[in-house]
Length: 94
Image 1 (cartoon, rainbow, N blue to C red):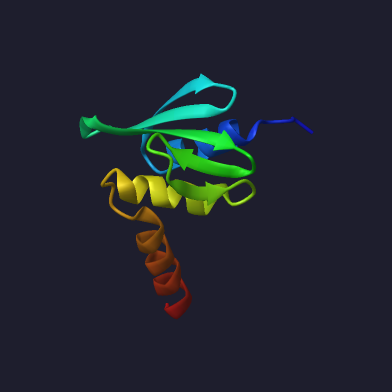
Image 2 (cartoon, rainbow, N blue to C red):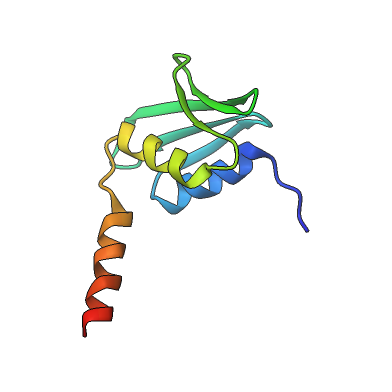
């Protein structure tokens, strides 16, 4: 199994949500809104938690999908997971 750091896992989740991501180091990623490159956030992994550059706790290790959703919301990206869920519901109904 490929051992990945918490930040690398978060970076994959952020990329999947459409954010532009740069790995700052082993414990930090920089995410920006690709439509508005001036809107971004550096997220660090510290003590089992993810923190924003201002020190706000935005998630915890092991829950990277929810953390990525919060970062995407913070940076103004539309919520894609909701539309995917709606599409799945429509397929079930049909």
